[in-house]
Length: 299
Image (tube, rainbow, N blue to C red):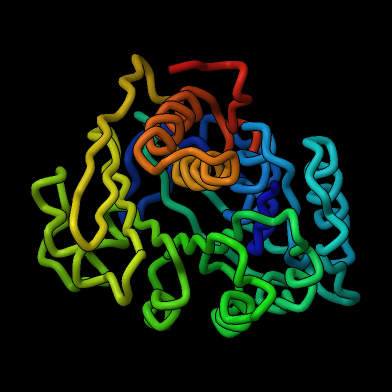
C-alpha cells in the first residue's frame, strides 16, 4: 500500500505580523522564517509521518530552493524519483503573512509547479498504490490526465480543491473524494456565506457527480464532515489551548486522511485522525515542519 501525491513544492517565507494588516498599511514584522512547503509537499510529509509509504510527483527548479525542497522530502522518507528538476526554472515560492492568533494570508509564485508533468506521476503509481492525492497549485490539465489515466483505476483518487479556481470544478467527476475548506466550499457553490457547521452542508449534494463519491468539508475549529449521496457524518474538532500558526493545517488534514484511507480505515475514523493531526499542527510554527508524527498523538 502507498500514497502518491501529485502537487506543488514551494519555499515558504513566513512573516509574523504584530497586528492585523489593512490594505495600504505598512507593518514592521516581529519575526520572519524560511521553510519548505507547498500544498503537495506538505501533504506528502503529513502522509509519510503518519506511516504510509509515500511518493511525491511534481517539479522544482534547478536552484538552491529546489535542492532544499528535495532534501526535506528525503529526510522524511518520501520517494522523490518522480519529482522533475526543470533546467532554467525557479522553484515555487510562497509568502505567508501570519496575524496574531495564527490566521494567515498566503501569496504564491508558482514557478516550476505549473510545468509539472503528470507522466512522472504515472510513473510513481504501481500495483501497491492505494491512494492518489492532488491539489490545484499545479496545471489542472495535468491533474485531469492523471486522474483519468487507466493506471489510476486501482487507486482511490482524492482531489483537494484548493485553492478555489474557475477550472477546478471540471475535475470533480474524476475524483472519488473531494476535500474543501469552508471558503472553497462557498466559492464553488456560489454561496452567500461560508458554512458554519454540519447543518449548512445539505447543498454539498450538488457537488456529487456520480455514485460512490464523497465530499469532505473542513469546518475549522468546529470539525469536519463527510457527505455522500445518502448520508452526512460529522466529526467534532479537537480543541487546542493556543493556536500558533494555521499555515498547512488543511494540508495536514488532507495528507493524514489519505494515509488513513491507504491504511484501510473507513471515512469516519479517518476524519477523527485527520482532525487530531490538524489540531496538533496549528500549535506549531510553519507548514511542513508542523506536520505531526503518528506517535505524537492518539485517539
